[in-house]
Image (cartoon, rainbow, N blue to C red; front, side, top):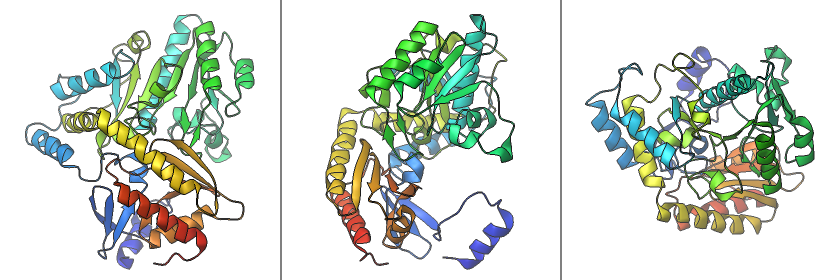
Length: 395
């Protein structure tokens, strides 16, 4: 690790991240390489961003071609890549209109605006959005207020009013919390930052039924689960209900910042000119990257490989000493460790041994590998984790 780089980082960057002592300089497929030339198997994928692999040729070629033609003109004018990407997203999901932005947080801000405006149109004076404990929706003030765990931090008070939460997967509590004043129920179909916890079909069905009963919107935050991560293009496609709004980002640009709020035909028509905007949203280069990513992911063979590799990893991980539980779907995997095992400590050992993972909670490792992962690489990762758990992991 370059000590001079570390010193400069401490001097010139705000202290908002606890960075691991590695400087990555190159990526290729499921591999990363540091400044000392060491190779790492990436099981974090930039937190579910590099799903098609690092520096994927098809994405790079699309971006290079577009950058040589036009990079930015703003949303005050037409560009074909923006419209092409909106059409692809709409037709592959909810069928309505799309709002583009730059991140998952921004996509959720858009969904919040839509829910509130739709509720006021039907006469709700003080609309409330019901969220779920453990969900993560972002760090700008609207999405932060919709994130129960973070919104309780007094250092950043006051939060935006109009949000309430219920315990995770508690259908009875959800029914008690929803009523005529509810604008929306907003949830992650599989919690990501909390440690990869899938929501039950019972809870999802109750959410859909309550939204229909009270004319509220059902919002799925698919920022982490979307774009093939669970083995279908969108996680909701493996569940029993269809949302009215869906937010996506992370993997959509293959490493380029882009997000989107996708609506059904009804929910997608709520916003009007002047209601919302974003300077850099769906610029031609980012839109071309998104089109290339969708072309790579939305293929039966790709999604089948995600499911098959996820099953393989799940079976292998479940057999390891020290593993208490394996959760998730496709290549979105949470590894619950037995009592007394420190997930952050195991993640540090794995990093020294050339495997990049994440510890979102003290007892859980989160695995989000790129879809180009091979069977041999998956087996290698399981072996590295077995070694780390046995206490024999070495740098």
